[in-house]
Image 1 (cartoon, rainbow, N blue to C red):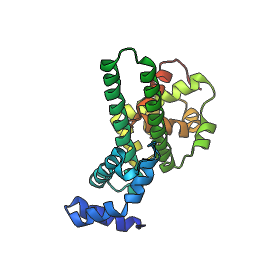
Image 2 (image 1 turned 135 degrees about the vertical axis):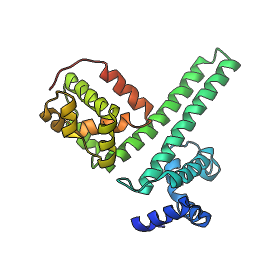
Image 3 (image 1 turned 120 degrees about the vertical axis):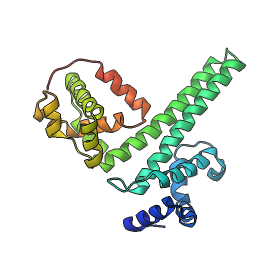
Image 4 (image 1 turned 180 degrees about the vertical axis):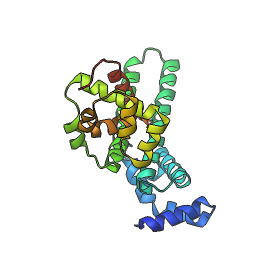
Length: 235
């Protein structure tokens, strides 16, 4: 069922206040929504309703009902992100469990272990990318625009990482970004000696970096950490 924004927000308030009937209705009306998200990240021909991932998706959707707060993000976008995060956690735990099982059962099965890890990482990267693109969209940025505005020079990319880390590491700057979804340009310039044209030229790229740094997208965070270890001056 398609709900208008005000209608679903009113139902969410009711559910958060303890109305179990409204909560069950929200969940029941979004079963297909949950299945569509989960189905992207499962393999095999087993009915999706019987998969562990589907149960995790439903639990995550219920969690989203409790934790959603009206703001820049719609509830469905928020719920989809919660589901993807829980699926990422699940796949990571499965990889750790199977790695330990393989190791204890047969130390010589290194090829099987490597193949399993590669498949698990591929799913995790896919989940992270899906979540990342959804967050970009909420800030009016698509992947084509991001690629276009990504600095071509390594020094400029390193500088953008440092700017993003400054924003996400400072409570006041971070609060502004999370509340308004925009870069706190004036406060940022007061804290660091960076050329305003650099920030404006790479605004979308810096926003993307901030979104990753403030997320639990560990694979992407690892890339940023490696990138940020380089050196560079203002561009």
